[in-house]
Structures are given as C-alpha cells and as structure tokens.
Length: 279
Image (cartoon, rainbow, N blue to C red; front, side, top):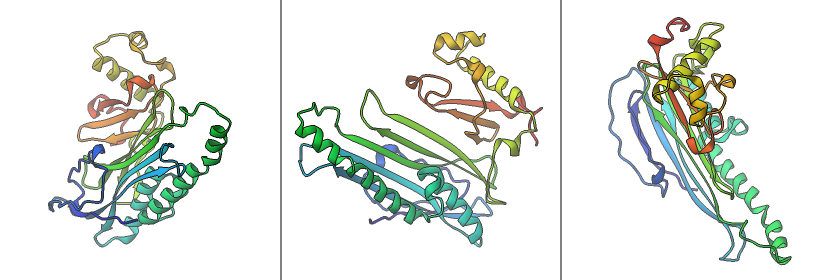
C-alpha cells in the first residue's frame, strides 16, 4: 500500500478531518504554529479499497476506507511517542494491533479485513448455486478515522476514533471513542484521574441535569417520553473529552437512547461538578 501525507503542527492546533475526504493519498500542506513546548509531527495513512467477493462483476463488494492520523514524531521524546502511538493504534484498530507501529497496524488490519471478507465467498457461491435469494448479500462498507481535537491544556492530547460499518440490514452502526493522553507521562487520562473517589453518583446527576437542560425538560421521566432509555441505569462510561471549561461525554448508539438518536454529547461545566473534581 502506498501512503502519504505528513504535516507538522503543535499540540494545540485544531485539525478538522472531513469524513467524506477519504478518497486517495493526497499531500496536504499544514501550517506550523509555535504555541506549545512540544511540537508533534502527524502522519496520515489513507486506505480506500473496494474488495469484490467473487469474480462475478455483479456480485457484492465491500468498501474499506481508513483515514488514520497519528503522531509520527515528538521532538526529543521517543518513549513518549511510542506510548502515544500505541494508544492511537489501539483506539482505531483494537487491542490486538496495539503492539504494531501505525504503518504495520494499518497493513495488518487491512490484510485480515480482506481475508475475513473473502472467506465468506464459499457461503455466497453455495447459496447462489442452491437458488437462494441473493439480495441479502448486498454491498457492505466500513469507514474508520481518527481526528485530533482541541485540548484545554498544553500537556493534554485529545483525539477521537470513529468507526462506521454496514453489513446489511436496515442500517449500519457507528461508534465514536474519545481519548485524552497526559503528555507528561504518556498515559491515558481516565475518570479516576480527574474525579475524587465515589464520584459516580454526583456525576450521574450532573449528566441527567444537563440532558434535561439541553432538551428543555424539567423531569427525568420526560426524557423517557422523548425516547431516552431508563436513566436509572445510566453510568459514566469513560468516553469523554477534557475541554476548556469542563468535560464532554459521548454516549454512542443504544447506550442511553435508541439508534436513531445517534451519538449524544453531554457537556458538563467544571463549575457544576467542582465538588467531585480533584483539581
């Protein structure tokens, strides 16, 4: 596979990647902005493949699109780079690929993805030979990308990993994962790092309160009427971004609401949860 795109910018630079731009390996010029003590070099690996299940041109096709943005260099700190890259790889491709470097992870993921899809060809050919209706073997796809996101602190790197796939049926699935990395240690920032012990109940109240406010409701029961699940079962899910004035949680499909409501973002101001914050 041929990959390109290298761009240099510091950690505080906001990068916006359009999901519709996963078409080819194009070189993009990026501005260098000196705003942070740490300067990161980001590479982008782009995959855009159509995999035919059989030699029959009328047969099903699976399309895989990957736009993987990751740090390829952190000036003067190779150990930090190794830790950060591992977290980017695992976020997009899964734990089984975390020990690979970004290029290797992308290559190996694509190889296995293609092998797994082509392994279904025998079932397809058998069903077709037996005269089964083949509409269920329609075209499928998977789209994957990472985006870096604005952070509230110079020593915090925030990013998201997005995966969408469609394997037939009424609709596909979507998942957005948020991640925060402490650049002083190279470790992921978890809820337990920013909240005091026993924070869960108060944080749950704050999330529900914000859901009510955003939806212009006053009672939790009204959220159920609007389509939300029973929020008595709601739990903080560690899927959050640290922002300038608080924290933003992301709840994916079926976590607290049906598929059609999509990703639900809940922003909570630091001032409203100061009693459970460590700092």
